[in-house]
Image (cartoon, rainbow, N blue to C red; front, side, top):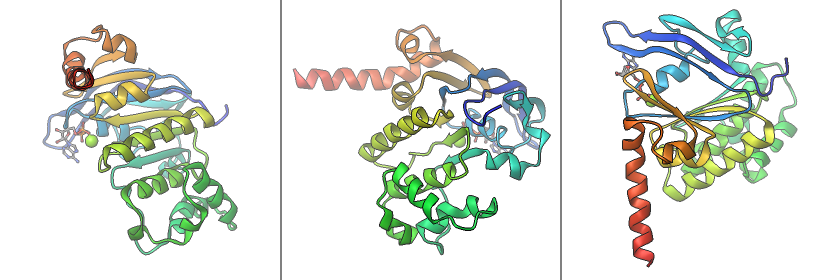
Amino acid sequence: MPEQSRSVTFKNVSKVYAGSVKAVDGVSLEVAGGSFVALVGASGSGKSTLLKTVNRLIEPSDGEVRIGDEPVAAEPAYLLRRRIGYVFQNIGLFPHMNVGENVAIGLKLAGEHDTRPRVAELLELVELAPELAERMPDALSGGQRQRVGVARALACKPGLLLMDEPFGALDPVTRDGLGKAIRALHDGMGLTTILVTHDMAEALLLADRVLVMEAGRIVADSTPRDLLAGKAGAVADALVAVPREQAHRLAELEK
Ligand code: ADP
Ligand code: MG
């Protein structure tokens, strides 16, 4: 099976944290290989917990996650994670390493010695100037830092990209640009992408399919078009209402 475009299957996945409520409550669904899926929901609805069961930062209390036909538990977590790109808010670049070294971490861990050409290629991929390889993380803008995070996540050519609020701390213009860049990378590289976001407008504009989570359950599962047409239920409608109303108000102003 090629690394690219593999599906992700959740089979009755639950997670109960010690002394806590069910953060994820019996989720079953399949993310098709090559698709771009957004996972949307209010804070605390269980999005991050569900996402982290894929790269085993969290072990489910019940159920199973598979990539392609293979359970994620079938191999050591560090090998699994090499095949999965992971980008999160405030990406956590190592402050004492320059950009190039940060991007090359995964490559070094995988035993590659001459990482320079690949780092240059990765910086180009995320539209960063090659000179930035020498720059320290604290001398980058927030948007540049997230691009470095994306380059690092893609270094080992994963077929699967997991993103958890990757644009959270960015201004709207940077956020929009990075969103488009990631969608282009997804299409160009044939990735399977799961994007966690609390921003419904972003989900609708970037994804092929939108999952809405509430209290640990998937309460809507729809294409952006059907979601906008009000076919995805009350929780989804409420999340769409805000950006829709803003768009109408802007359109009114332009009249
Ligand atoms: P989201 O990403 O949608 O904001 P999370 O998956 O982070 O939601 O959290 C889901 C629920 O699980 C919340 O009620 C949260 O407080 C709880 N939770 C998350 N992480 C932990 C943890 N490590 N220990 C205990 N409870 C947690
Ligand atoms: Mg979260």
